[in-house]
Length: 67
Image 1 (tube, rainbow, N blue to C red):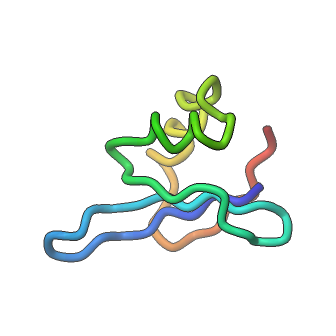
Image 2 (cartoon, rainbow, N blue to C red; image 1 turned 180 degrees about the vertical axis):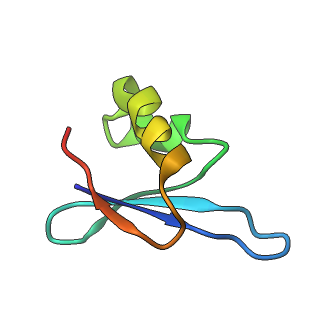
């Protein structure tokens, strides 16, 4: 799984994308509201771990996420 942090502009907030190994979009959520989307894809129990990684991830960088 891959994680990408996307910088928002003006009134558009910052977002996070979670993608599988074929780079298919699994989840797309606002940085400040991850719970609902992560629950939807079955990663609700890992939300704190994922958001801790997102906090330190630079915008636009792709990171391979091992869960």
